[in-house]
Length: 116
Image (cartoon, rainbow, N blue to C red):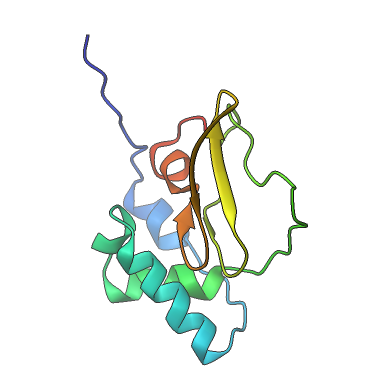
């Protein structure tokens, strides 16, 4: 069979009410976040203003080594960008890949409104 993924449509009124929050960051952090977004196959297509809005609204989080950031099967309402450390990705208990600094993850569930 075939599978299709659809996104939720927003009317103009909803779009006009959307307000981007601002969280202060130093210049180097902003640059690294913007580059990580541009390298991402899905988000890299956004225009400069959209990328800047995402970067400006992101807030830092510290996660202790060994802690889970995203739980498989949960709803996705945030995306993440690694800033330091190393990360492992697994599904159904099987290791899939690893990555380190300045990589976007968690975006597919957010963009497509599907489970992680």
